[in-house]
Length: 462
Image (tube, rainbow, N blue to C red; front, side, top):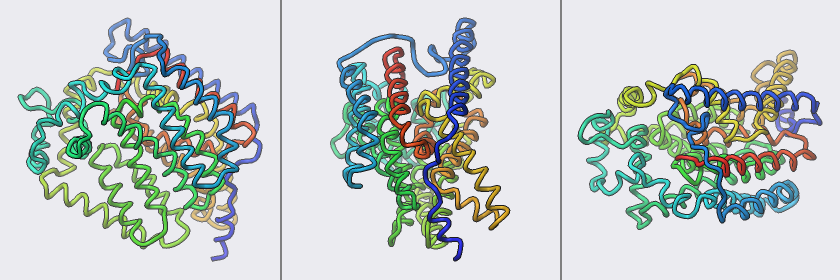
């Protein structure tokens, strides 16, 4: 019990850090991005099977502007200039509401640079997308029971690319939207935007519940001005990011039933993407950092997850069988041709464009804080106490980084990670809360400039 106060008062924001180290990290980021672009151009010229014209992003080079351009510029300037001040001084509810509204405005304005139809309505209606399959789903139980049989390609009733590449929960989201009268590309895209923007609420709520109220406020502008918002409004991964963050927030919250519900939500995420088994690392960190009731929360969350998994299994979709088949489907397509030797490091450049240039310096600070706390704690109170004492602004980004590394090294994430890793990118940005307060505006300006440059130079593909 004597260690509890020390844990509760662990510093949330690092003191002023050497600017030289951050400049070195920024130089490394620039070198990585430059190398990824130049090598990508070379490999595409040699027809090396990247299947990404603007590698490392899944996009094509097409400089353009649109009527969303001035709005995006205005939102970027407003968040960068006033965001940190509002986050520090406003009432908590106002901070969360302002963050969500700013994220919605940012995402929509970026999408509308491409126009209403091309930027929103048609993004999710292609033959590779979930909406292509929705009209044919007239019997949900039968669809679940026969889902696995349609995963492999080159058969008469093979699922479209995105549907086959995910468990059935992803398709069900859009089927349910259609059932309640929100069918079609526009409603689906707006759902992605509105749900994806909720990370500006659920991630800070998680940090506050885990004893980091100042960090919870500091991270809101970085989430609102996320460069990855380019893909939040153009893919189902925006919804996925929102659902994952909601599950973790419920897991962190105190109160009867929240851990059970959080486990159920996180259990459902396993049926949105096979890669979300890696979210378990984040869930473990959240449970470990809860101020009390960790064992009860673990049991309740496990029960919620098991209930969802049992329901899907009894409905005829065993997760492990779907995973085995989707790996086979992956190598039936571009996955077999995309060179691992390029994508295993170029993926990190794509992640950098999604999370923004603040990513490297923020993670550097988190790693340094973790190393220092571990060394001190090992000498004084033991490794476990030291790890918990580092706090959520260190452990959550590091857990997300380990998850991303696992996905990257697996070889099952070659290209398109700028959208696929959105659910992890928002937790990586938690480390930005440790940056000196006086530097926030400059970092936010860099975040906004990154998104504006990508969105206006490239035509992104969902």
